[in-house]
Length: 65
Image (cartoon, rainbow, N blue to C red; front, side, top):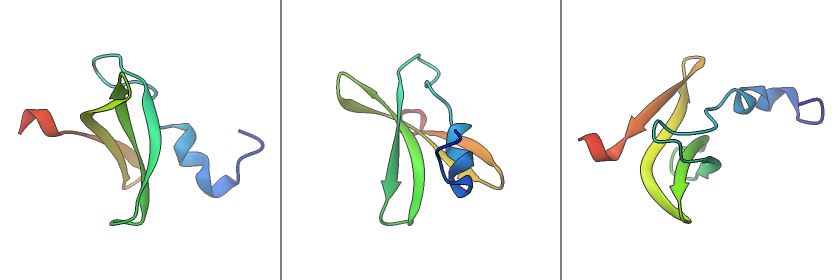
């Protein structure tokens, strides 16, 4: 955490796993020009992601729509 620029401190508080226990990966959305985390299982996206909004991480699950 000491080696990371302070403007990226919020990434250190990102969820490390989704509700099913799959590990998350930090990604960058060119469309929204913002970093987010998403989970993967066997190298494929699970549909779960979390976006940093208003000072907290907000999970979004495409499967539950």
